[in-house]
Each structure stands twice: as structure tokens, then as C-alpha cells.
Image 1 (cartoon, one colour):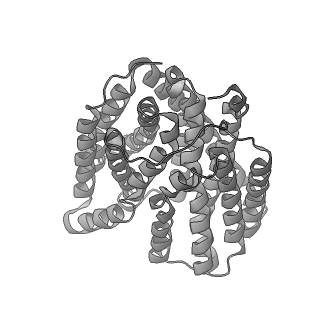
Image 2 (cartoon, one colour):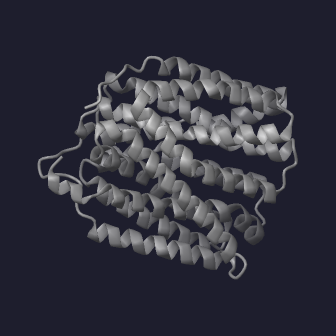
Length: 379
């Protein structure tokens, strides 16, 4: 990479991620209450909107096509702008249909930002520091979520939901517009991007798919278990979320350090091994404090995804990274609609234990595939 390209510093990439995650966290915190209080949304309404929100993730392979014509820095900046616009439109919504449309727009911005910003970071970092820089980025994203959640709580004391959407969305939109104009290209004149579905990337795509299955079981059913079976109220759930944000500020950096020191294989195999017991814990642990501890550990282990990206960067040349990341996100979202439905049916027909034991089986298979990751030389 040309030295001039270093003008796109890791600090700028990190700032972009903080803005994105601050905006996304605001949406996530406000959405359910806004939908229910303003439009009397039912669980079915919310479930449908949450399902269609994942469609842009399924279409994330489009990032690879866009990268053939636009730089990653430009796509990431415009994605921030789109998220800001989506938040503003959420506030302007006069019906559930309009709210769903605004949410999908916001989701396109979020899902197109992630692979392009990650690509910039991976291309800027030295191979021996891939884990470290990704761990720091995840740490700052957790800080953004923590600060954003705190600000939303304070703002709700003085402002209504719509005004908060306008303020947060407006700030994100303005920053996105500025970065779209001011952010220099992250490529040299001779650099190109390519879309390649090579056999050597198949392990990355398989692991992305399996980790998507695990993610959707966690996001759909872990909190639902605590609420449905253990009757945790919104206050306790909020405290649990704050604890997750706070803890991952530190654990993300540790996971990044361990990935650099011991290799991606150990992190991916180790995290999947632990997740087998985590999912079995969801199925069989009835002691609430221990179950909440399991939930926190589960959330921490999401940080292991940085090792999968480090593995990709070490096997892919510069021109393939963005395309591979975008196809990886699509693979991660293939089960976005299937897993919640199938898991819910298993829950109703055979009990919640079956849903989580199925998750244990998935992460066990993930562990077996992770064992195939070779030990890669540090360059």
C-alpha cells in the first residue's frame, strides 16, 4: 500500500466505527419502545421488522461489486450518512410500514459499512498486529455503545423519542456527509479490487456461515430465555447490557492480543469449545446468577470474530479482501430468517433445551472446521 494511503489512518477508521456504532446503538435502544408506544406494535409486527432488517446483511455481497468502482473509504462514509438518514426517517415515521422502511434503509448503511471499514483496517494494519488493532476497534465500539446508551437514557428524561431520533440521526448524517467529502481515497492509483469465490477462501465462508447460525440463536433466544423463563424485567436486562458493553471494552483487547500471540486457530477453536458448554448451560442451568454469567461470557466470545478476519487477511491479497469480507457477511446472514423460525418451533414442540442443544451442535461443528485453519506465518 502506497505511503500516501496511510493518510487514511487507523484513528480515522476507528472514529468512523464509533460514529456508526453510536448511531446503531441508539436505534437498538429506542426501537422497541418507539414501535410499541407510538404505533401499538405487536410482537408479530416487531418480529417481522426485525426479520426484514436482516435482508441488507444477506445482500452484503453487493459491497464487493461497489468496491470495483468506489473506494472503501467512500463506501464507508456514505454508509454512515445513510444510517443517519435512516434514523431521521425513523423519527419522521407516521406508520409501522414507514418505520420498517426507515429501519431497512438504516440497516443497509450498517451492513455495507461493516465490511468496508473492516477492510480498510485490515489493509492498514501489519499482519503481526491484526488482532491488536481489531481488538482496539471493538473496544472503542463497546465504549460507543456504552456512552450512547447512557446518553439515550438521559435524553429520554427531557425529550420524546422522535426528537432523540432527529438529534442522533442528524449528528450521524452530518458526520457521514463530511467524511464523504473530506476523507481521502484509501487506494493507490494502480490498486484494483476483484470479486473472487476461490476454493482457498471456502473455509472462511463456511466459518462465517456457522458463526452466523450461532449469532442468530444468541440474539434471538438468549435474552428471551432470561425474560420468558426467569422473568427478568427491563431494568435488569438494561443493567446486563451495560455490563456487557463495559466488560468488552477490556476483553476485546485481550482477545486481539491472544490472537496475535498464539494464532487465529487457537482463538477460534477455543471460543467454539467454550460455546459448546455455554449453550448446554442455557439448556440445563436454572440458577439465575450463573445463567446471567453465562450470558456475559457468551457475549464476550463474540470478540473472537476478529481472529477469523485476521485469518482471511493473511491468506487473501489486497484486491480480494473487501470482496471476501462482503461475501462472508452474506454467509453470516443466510440463516437470519431461518434460525429464529426453526429455533422457535423447536422451543414450542420440544422445549427450550432443544433449541440451545441445537446451538451446541452448531458450535461443535464450527470447532471441527476451525481445526483446519493452518498455522500462518507472521509477515
